Image 1: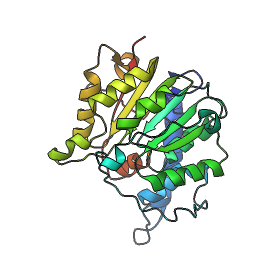
Image 2: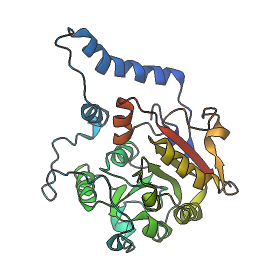
Image 3: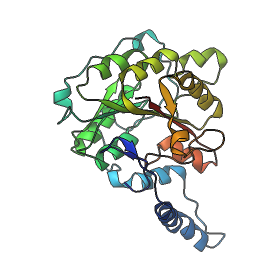
Length: 289
């Protein structure tokens, strides 16, 4: 778990060593930067952000795993979660059929997208934690479930669900403790009239806090400052129940943003954004004991 602040085994956060961070930077330089610099200026080939995604998730070996049921998936970027068809709560699965051990701590990723981020975590810690991805785009859920089966992982599951109406119903029925919730680069819904479509609203925040185990954590991030500030506003408003973990652990900057990704792996959107030179705004909260 080099370079990762979160330990699934202990449900605590671990500070990475400087040597670990330097080693990861050196590997990145050797794999990406140096080959490009060694080419002549005329023949220099720049790596693309999709290639960076493939490199970062190479351990999953998903490139040749083609899901015939959904084919090649084109991702619809903007989904209106307030559509009547999406306001129906998802059915609670038989957790014992989904996970091999339902007593393990649970991490929920709201808006799991392709699922690669959660699959990487599940493969890294197969016996330490269960992972649940909630996603509004059914084809992505179908493909993610296919990948999970191909990888023979029994500690991860994806559900086609609108977290706004399904989170509390699903998570409250899970037998084990909820120790981590992530909301990573959600749909920004830029237009002011569409802000009500943003996933982080007070009802969801309250549901997360209600279900979260004391000491459990919430990790939010966005490459859009306005969206990050909007999410932060809702969670900061619950300071009587949540504390700023970054501040407590001394891992945030003077503006209160985490200085590094604490998960050991970047999301696909995170990779694309940083490739374009954008900053990622991150916050982590901990439920007071």
